[in-house]
Amino acid sequence: MASMSYNALPHDADAWETEAQRLSMHRPLVVTSRRWQHLFQTAKNLSPVFFDSFHPNPDYTDCSLGYEVYQREHCDGLIACGGGSAMDTAKGIKALALSETPVHALRGEFLSDRPVPPFLAIPTTAGSGSEATPNAVLYKEGNKCSLSHPLLTPDQAIWDARLLNSLPNLQKKSCALDALCQGIESFWCRAATKESRAHAERAILGVLHHIDTYLEEKPETFPGAAEQMMEASRESGLAIAITRTTAPHAMSYMLTKFLNIPHGCACALTLPYVWEHMTHSDDPYVQKALSDLSSLLHTEVQDGPRLFLGLLDHLRVLPGLSVPDDTLDALADSVNVERLQNHPETLTQEEIRKIYRQALFPVDPELLACARKVWSNATV
Ligand SMILES: [Fe+2]
Image 1 (cartoon, helix red, strand yellow):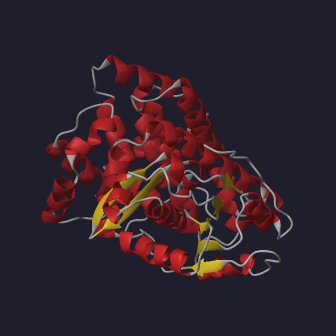
Image 2 (cartoon, protein in one colour):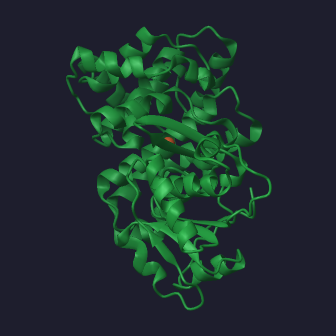
Image 3 (cartoon, helix red, strand yellow):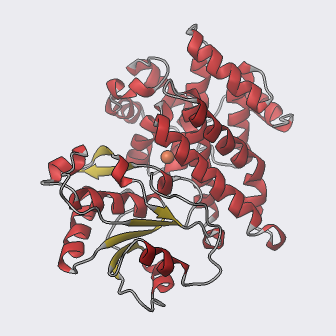
């Protein structure tokens, strides 16, 4: 990763321009929605070109269109300002700029002789941590493509918590849950290292300690709580940049695609049931990971998933749907179990179907009562 720095500023509107110039940009392509374009219209020395034709779950064709604009306008750098979608679109555009063909771009097979566009990230949500990772999720003809290459990590990021001020409440919750899930999944991932664990711990505790204050939106705690959430989000990005994510993330994309559930909520719905399934594992690695996670959360191993479920109830994000059997079948069939290799235990198609059912249907009243009790007694 290049010189990533934590910059809770800027209080002056020119900070992005200073950073872009430091990265040798003259005519950056700014990947952002219309609502943020005003931030860049004060440019004194640069000539930004805007690209806003991308979707919440960006499609490969969005990136292709963006790259056409990048070439046509002779841009010399990329600025992504927004949530994970703006970041992932910019990463897709950068991949195209570095590749011989779109197929090579999606495989992350880059040419060594192409000039590498500098890349500045300005997150406007606290959740994906995408500004700190080399990963992007794009869709091609409805299918999920995971793109990852060290050159896709932004060279620099600017974190300005004031940008979180106007986010809708559901989006704040979903983004915070994304950061929390990324932290937990990274924590138990077999690829975890001492460094990734440290990032994951800070992400998990950061979200749990600050989520209520952040969601309350009281003037006296703003932007302090938002800054803490941005920091937790960044930590979750740094954690998964080392380990990648596991089953809850792999299963979330289908919930977003079929049921339009926002990404972070989609990850969070299956996570307590994936976690509960893991508590029955006799694999020493899984047992140790869950024991360490319980210590971090000051809870018993079997209460970890209940604590998480209690949080979802507290945040009022449990869906309580009654999804038809054929939808459950379609969800389970569309998860490629071979792609779950990053998850610390093997899950069968039938187990995945059962987890989807548990995640989407109303929670068993006895379990819910228990989860509420664990959550209300939590000391984390
Ligand atoms: Fe995520």
